[in-house]
Amino acid sequence: MKYWLIKSEPGVYSIDQLEKDGFTIWDGIRNYQARNNLNAMKVNDGCLFYHSNDGKAIVGLAKVKKEAFPDPGTEDPAWMAIEVAFEKRFSKPVFLENIKKEPQLQEMVLVKNSRLSVQPVLPEEFELILNMAQSNQ
DNA sequence: GCCAACGTTGGC
DNA sequence: GCCAACGTTGGC
Image (cartoon, rainbow, N blue to C red):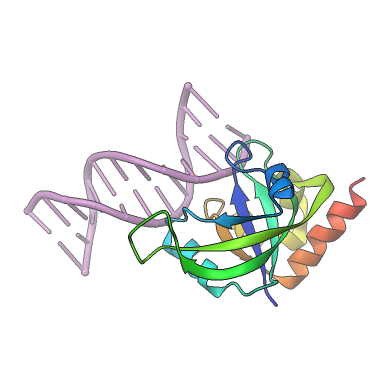
């Protein structure tokens, strides 16, 4: 079981929308590093759901529902998509600002390479984020 | 709205 | 194969 972080601009697709939909296709990825991460995802892997630009916080959890398949949005076989299912929404988001203040999270890809839209997360990072979401009240 | 960081493209 | 130019992302 691996852990990931997936990014979305809330104006494009938010955690609220995912909660309503139950699950969604995660497509439109046009970056090889992100694509490679999509390919490595397995059913039931945990995904932190991050709101970029507007929000700048991890707002909830999703899990991988369907493993990589060709992105239906393009003819180019290089690009893949997955499906993710809604898991939970944090009552209080874990803000990027606070992640940057946490010494144990300095190595997160989110901190080091903010542009990568699908990124791996270490189990201990994942746990710590969950703890922060709970103690954040 | 600006700009730094990163990725991609294309001329040589 | 190098690198300048350009486009995009996303934090600030």
